[in-house]
Length: 369
Figure 1 (cartoon, rainbow, N blue to C red):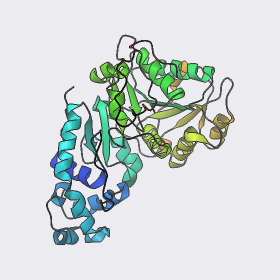
Figure 2 (figure 1 turned 45 degrees about the vertical axis):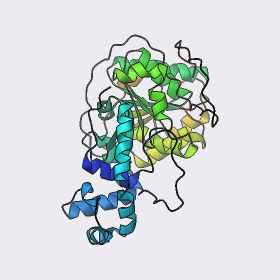
Figure 3 (figure 1 turned 60 degrees about the horizontal axis):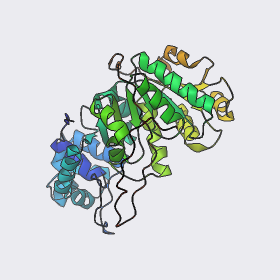
Figure 4 (figure 1 turned 90 degrees about the horizontal axis):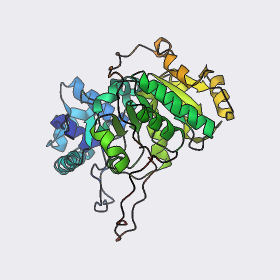
């Protein structure tokens, strides 16, 4: 597919200063003295200093330490660190080109394609760089986040799938996290109904985007896969927890289908979102449920007592959660043939020095969540 948002000099500067790596595949072992990229909050301080000076990120490339010291003195960030990070720009530009040739795009917080919701809701902690595949425009379309446990019961899985299908038929995207269980059920339900899907991944973006099950949907721009962590980083619990906030912040509202009380990523993500008041959060209260659902209501979630189709009728008013955001992009109902699709579990790497098995994966029915 064509990348319609090529990297600008300002974007390249942000990539150089805030990312550890961009390209998938083997890389030389990093030297112990390699500079540590800036955190989102550190980059936010740099950006504020540049704005005050009437400058742009690309001004940081090719500058001497003395020049950087004068420009960024108020940030309390080492100008030597900035200079060393900026030296990587040429190498990273080639990495970005390689990713683009594989259908992976990067957008930075300085790019007009960067989702306004993330800027508004996360502020200084918004990821400076996002990696993705598919229709980048979907990131600004809002929609309904459908979230829940990996080990959900069959009734909860059916609810997630049916609710997502109803949302898809209404013309709104479904947003979820690409994990086993509720996430996979919701994303499959939306895709089977011909809808748009935003999958926020913690790992293995490139390999998942190129998988047999998802490649056609990504290329047809009915699905966008997104990661704040890189194109092909391995799975970790920490990365999975960090991406949860993006799921909430990209949505108009969120529905928690199944949550364990006091533990797990679903509980942690929902309670963080409730405290931050990013979006209205509904917790399902029908059928046999884990105690976490009722506990979320006690902490401020709104009760959802109806059937799956009732999800499309939930209020999207954000007045109680701060200033209303710009209207979502309306894409209308997307009609698609049924496709099977989302088995977004981490894909194990082959043993070092050995090739992958030669047999191809079957292009059959979707995997059970």
